[in-house]
Every structure is written in C-alpha cells, then in structure tokens.
Length: 171
Image (cartoon, rainbow, N blue to C red; front, side):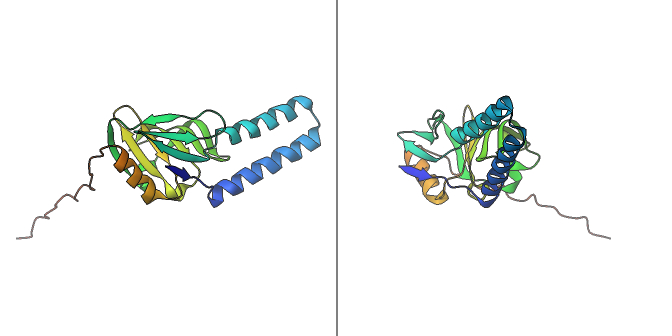
C-alpha cells in the first residue's frame, strides 16, 4: 500500500527561498567551485527528500531518489499521531531542517534519538519499534496508521491519566 507525502507550506517556502538565494549567489559570484557545491547541495537535499511511503509485508519503505530506507515492523511498540510534546526541545543531529523536508537524525526530550522522514509537520506519525524510533508524514495519516496496525500487531496505547491531586483542605 502506497502513501504520498506532500510538502507543507513552510517546506515549500524554505526550499524556494534557499534555492533562489543559492542561484542568486551563483549568478553573482560566477565561481565554478561555489556553483558546483551549491548545485550539489540542492540536488542531494532533493534526492533525500521523502516522496512517499510504501507499506510492504511488515515494513515501511521510504520512497526517495537517494536510497530507500526500510523500517521493520516486527517489534512495533507504538504507532500513533505525533504530538507537539514529542518534539519539544528537539535538535537536528544530522539532516535537513526544512530544505525539501525535515529528514535525518534528530533528538528530542520525549522521543530520544529518532529518524525523521517528514515533509509536512501537520501530518507526523511516530512509529516506535524495539530498536528505533521513526517519524513519517503521510498525507493520509489515519489510513497509514490503519495499514501499520493491519500489517503488524501494535499494542493499543492510551494517554496516561492525569495524576490525581488532592490539595490539603484548610482546617
């Protein structure tokens, strides 16, 4: 089953501005070395950008021009919509932070180290297995989650209940 991954507005704006800036600098400097590096940066960033996701028998295959990472679903612990809390205090360790998507290796306080294959921050899905955590952004989030659950047994997880707090009563 294939799921598309389209760019959100921020990704489109960042990508367009960076490309326009690099093209303007290339035109201004006319340096063969800088031009080559700038064009290589654009091509490599585009090649690593996720185009979609293919759910095969018990794995997710990230579709992109530069290699196709496979995330095994043999020991899925959790598959759910991402929350803003998942990405609080997150940092990019290696990868792209907006140029043709948000992909690479990241770390956050809640998720720890995780691989991101995201093009749209509004559609993020967290998949946690026994060996890794990955974040995706399919256009059809519910269909993607249902397909994962149909492919691999995923434990049902519920948000933790709020702790009960009984304030001492004045006497």
